[in-house]
Length: 71
Image 1: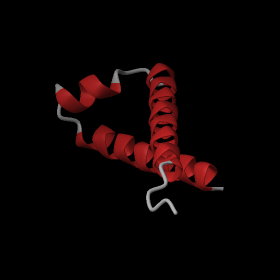
Image 2: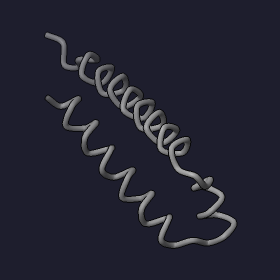
Image 3: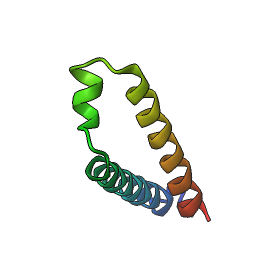
Image 4: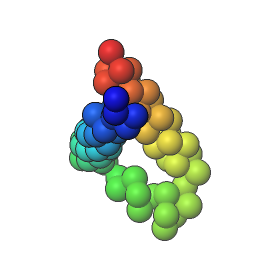
């Protein structure tokens, strides 16, 4: 009897990587759709409003990806 099953761990790693890739693709699409460079606005100009909107976007997309992967 085997006590250690690697398949759930491998599945978690694959789904985590897939979720991160999809999140980065979503961020790239939003970056191209917005007129300003969001990262430059947050880091260089210290624009808190853009940082909050960007954080909300990342959390929202992450929840959608999580629900889609979980089923």
